[in-house]
Image 1 (cartoon, rainbow, N blue to C red):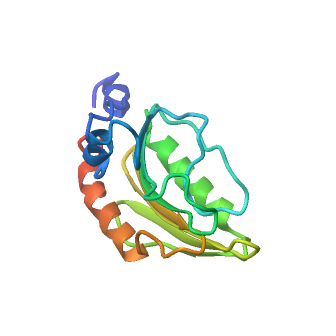
Image 2 (tube, one colour; image 1 turned 30 degrees about the vertical axis):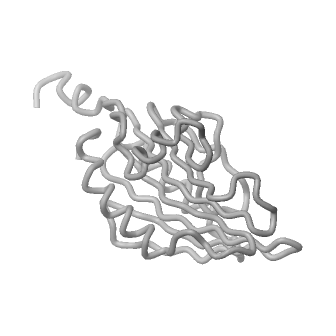
Image 3 (cartoon, rainbow, N blue to C red; image 1 turned 180 degrees about the horizontal axis):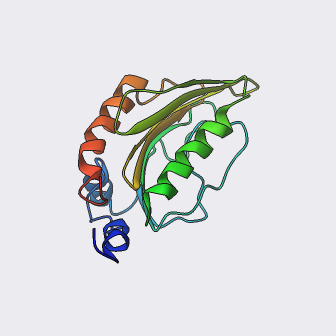
Length: 184
């Protein structure tokens, strides 16, 4: 490899329009009645099961798509799902974010973590919050090169919109696409 080649290879590309698995239907909902697309979102939370909210950052590009079937629905019946793609300038940034997600889940009695065999590395978790309005959150995050895709859902006292198996299936499909926006 000649000088400067490694730096060029590590540069992140942009996330193309309609790259996310559910982005087309989200963009079709121009009045945001159920679907939402957020570009960037550096101040938004990362939707992974964790005991302590974390504002994970460090990516160079990000896109979030979320779906809420009953916008403004009651607290007891609230349920949502979504996907997020994070693109880093360097693979080390994506590795750090995955390690941070794992660290946030350790020691949290309410979380059941797992490591599905998807992409170069993956982490998953199910968080069950007991209380006046119980909630279940579940997610799968997959990394390929300098990109991470995350599939999640949360449901209060309602049936979740997706199963963990569905999230893993989505993560597997996106893992195949991630190499087109990062070096793998």
